Length: 454
Image (cartoon, rainbow, N blue to C red; front, side):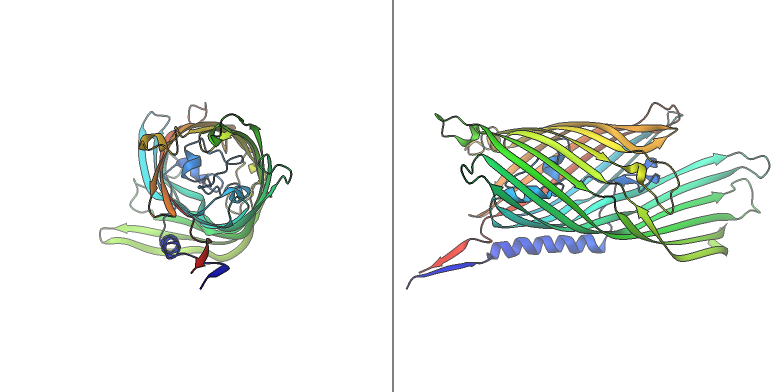
């Protein structure tokens, strides 16, 4: 008996991969896994805005708008989903380290490890349309520093500033690719969109202590901001084959030109704020709370977020080499927060990235490794003494391919960033940061493969 089924079935291995992804989501939900190393500049605005690119892009200077891959998810431009060839699961972890140099030349070193991204993409029709979902960090606050004040009218005291917390975004999106019907190998246009939800909590704290006085209480001011809102991101990509060697059947020699762009409008996040002021007394037996002079809970408000635009171009072929650049712009001058009254400026970043695979089908393993390099330069939204911070870094990365099953393969990506943030103001902190990301990519071609039974 011969039976041909038109239905698609998910393989057992596919369910295993999905279970791994769901398990990672549960870990992220019940623990604080998205974080960053401590930075005094994270007290400004919403703190450190996390990159939404994954391990492969990070090694290429964080380029995103023109980047697409048959085996890697690019959540920063949802139009890229349409170029995926296999159902894909991506997860990653990173280590952030920062050396902070103060005006008095003292150096403070800090580091932190965390989960960097969790995402899955389903590909019912390879190189035509796909959908993706994931959980990503949106922004982090992590700082703790002391300012000593000499006040002859009161007494010498210390202002201790501390901040912590994260905003996250969970997203779901899809993309579709239109191909030229006359010569479908030449012109391709993809359009995609992500729809998501931003949520999380940020804590801002100021403690005033009087180290030279035993008769003065310590004051502790705490503001907790809870934010949530729906968000979106749209993207487009246009690809054309600009070179083909008719005498050489090796498709690695084909060269493609891709132009990409993404955008989202300025969001208004719903906020809820808890403010309270307590007075404390430090005793040998512990901390004693004297009173709470003021407290307000569940104050509702709005938080205006910037609009973001990215555009870029890439040439090459993923099977051999790719060279790309993109430009990102964010309107942070429109930012408004119930807890931050300072002025931010529009930020921008120009990035370059390169990837080469010596021979992706070679029997020699080192010829199948992907090598990546990149760099970026830009201006941060943070303003210190009327000067925006410079942000410059170099990046590198390696992709190690492995075969798991007949229809399942994996890529282990390692990427690094080494950069600096600061300005020419003598009193400004100078930050030298280094970030390492380790990403695991699982690709399965068996999820939507049609079965045939005899």
